[in-house]
Amino acid sequence: MKYAFFILFIISLSSGYAQTKAAERTSVDLTIYNQNLSLIREERTMHLPKGTSKVVVPDIPQTIDGTSVHFLSVTAPDAVKVLEQNYQYDLVNQGKLLEKYIGKEVEFVRLDESTKKEYTVKGIILSTGYQSQPAYGSSQMNYSYVGGMVAQVNGKIEVNPAGRLVLPSLSEGLILKPQLEWLVSNSREGEHKTEISYLAGQLAWSCNYVALLGKEDTKLDLTGWVTLTNNSGTTFSNAGLKLVAGDVNLVKEEFQGAMKGRGVMVMADEAAPQFKQSELFEYKLYTLQRRADLKDNETKQIELTSGKNVASKKVFIYDGMADQWRYYRNSYSYRNQGSFGQQSNPKVGVFVTFRNEEKAGLGIALPKGKVRVYKRDDDGKEQFIGEDQIDHTPKDEEIRLYLGNAFDIVGERAQKDFKSFSSGRVVEETIEIKVRNHKSEQVEVLVYEHPWRWSEWEITKSNTEWEKVDQSTLKFPVKIAKDGEKVVTYTIRYSW
Image (tube, rainbow, N blue to C red; front, side, top):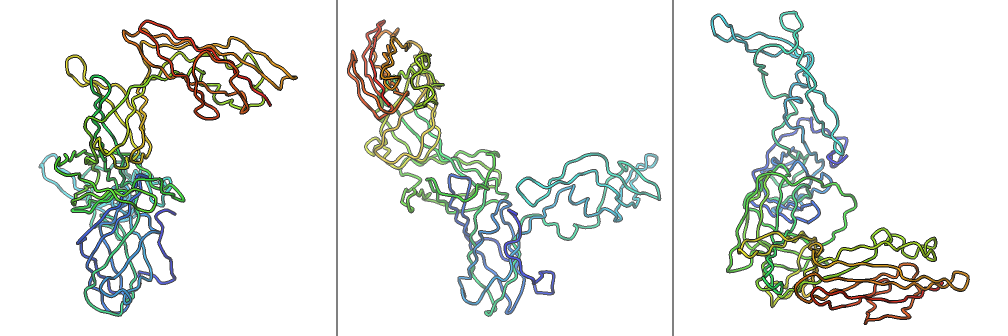
C-alpha cells in the first residue's frame, strides 16, 4: 500500500517506551521535479534518551512516499538507529470522529423553547450518517454523507436527534496533522541535530512562457515563469528551493494531483536572475538565489528567464496530405491502391521560430512548458494570437511555435496520375499542389510532402526545387506574389 508502514517488525509501539517529540524544523530545502514529485530535506533537533524510545516527528506532508524516508543523526551518526518507522495519517474529520463513538455515550445540547435556556441530554450513537470506503490508490478512507444520524436517547431511537452534539474528547488514534512515529535505539543521551529526507507528491512545478511578438514579426520579447504548486498538506517556511528539469525515470507514477489554491505572483528583480542554472547528472538544476515560503494549497509564480528583442521569423507551412493517411505509412495493404490518399488538407499553418541564444538574453536550457504568444493591434493593445507547447530545449537550439492557420493563404493537393508496373511492384504517382496567396504582399510558403506508400522511392520529375528533409519528408520552398498562385507538380516512383 502507498501509505503503509515503512518497516514492520514484531516489536509493537504500544509497549511502554518513553516518547519524545521532535522540535519544529530549523531548516528545510526542497528539490522539486517537473513530474509532480519532490525531495524534501529538513533539519530538526531531538532530545533522545539512552536506550530504546519512541520519537514523534510532526507536520509531515500527507503525500509522503513512506518507503523513501532517510534519517541521520548529525550529532552522533553511529549512536542512533531507527528500528521501526510508521507514518500516521488518521486525521480528524467528522465522519471518522463519529465512527469512533459508535456505541458510546455522548451529549446533545438542546434548547428549552419556553425558558430559552439550554439543557443537556445523554444518548448513544447507533449510526453516524456517514459511509466510509477506501480511497483509490491509498489505504486511507473516504467518508461521504448518506443520511441522518441515529441515536438512542432516553431509551428511544431518534433519527437526526435534535441538539448540538458534544463529544467528551478526541478519540484515541486520531491526529490533527500527519506525523512519523519511530522506535529508536540510542547509545548517546542528549540533544541530537538530525536530518530527515523523503519524497512527496503534489508538490510540483511547471514552466510557462509569455511572448510578445513585434509589429513586423521579426522580434519578440520572451518571459519564462516557474509555477510552484503545493498541495502536500504542509507549509514550508523559509525554504531553500531547487528545481530539476528533465525526464527523470520513475518506476511507478504515484504522485498525481490537480493544481489548485490561491495564487501568488512574485515579481522578478531586474538587476539579477532569480534562478541560477547548473548541471545535475543529465538534467538541468535551477536554484533560487534566495529562500522562499511555500504555503499549503498555494500556487506561486517566480520569473525564471527573460529575453528582449529576440530575433524571430514568421513561417508558413503547407502540409497538404489529409491527416488520416499518415497512420498508413508503409502499409502493405494500401501501397498500390491508387484511389487512396487523395483527400486534401486546405489549411496553411503559421509558425514563429526563434533561437534560444545568450545574445538575445536567453541562452539557458528552457524547461518544457506552454508558450502563449501576444501581439499589439493597431490601437497598441495586446491581443492573444496563439499558443504551443515546447519540450526541454537546450541553449542555442531553434524553437518553432505553431500558432494556428493562416486566414489568407490556402492550399490544395490532388493526385493527377497513378500508374502501376511490374505486377504491382512499381508504382508511379503524380501530385499537384496549389497554394494561393490572398494577402497584400508576397509570402514564402514551405510545402511539405510525405512519401507514404513505401520506404523505397525516388523523385523522377519536379517543376520546382525540392529538398529531402528525411526519408519520409520532402520540402518545396515557394514564393507567391500577392493575390497569386503557385503550382508544384512532382512525380514519385515507389518500388518494392
